[in-house]
Image (cartoon, rainbow, N blue to C red; front, top):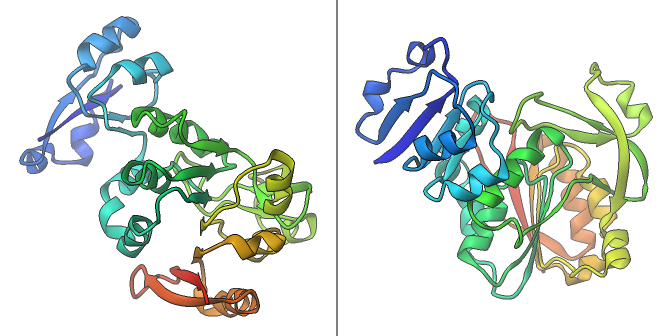
Length: 294
């Protein structure tokens, strides 16, 4: 039974949203409605818990706390991260199967890593795998780091907090869901940004995969998972001649019925074919396509 601590519930409202008694068969809950005195108090009171549900993030989750709560497996900060934790094994089973079939001593680039679920899973089941997590959203980086630390992988998986494109330059990074663990963020030029009804964006550096590999002498990826909500073609173009070293690419596409033809045509010219696909549900327009070198 998973022991869950609900933190910072000063108004005792958590049970108004969820009937905790219905979950008692799988989870053991304890609600903390009073603030902790200091970090030592946090460590003492939470030492036996495996999951923390943080309602208002008033209790800072410092590196010292994360490192010393040795039983901790999950930190949930909102409904989005809760959804990601709850659906990990069911939402994209073919993605998990794809990762499970990675060969030993290869290199995996998780582009659009979000909070790091697939980066972490790949490294846990294949310790010889060289894993790079690309996540430019500042809303997700903090949780990505915490998740790596919880799994003792913060020195094993390398984080790149910059967006990828087909060239080097200053572009607009547009935030999608303005929440921890949110999705739908993407990279846009000034012309395309003007068409979007959003103020949630900032300018920053983007770089191509080819330039990144050459500049920092990085290993060329054998496997790429691409989940970037919009600039897939630009990132693929930015691979350049390094694409010949790639074995497989998994691409998540929104509005896939419209966009798959562009991606498929481009990769077909690079000698890649679709060998598997995964539709999330009948009403969803998002799907994963796994391309393999022909």
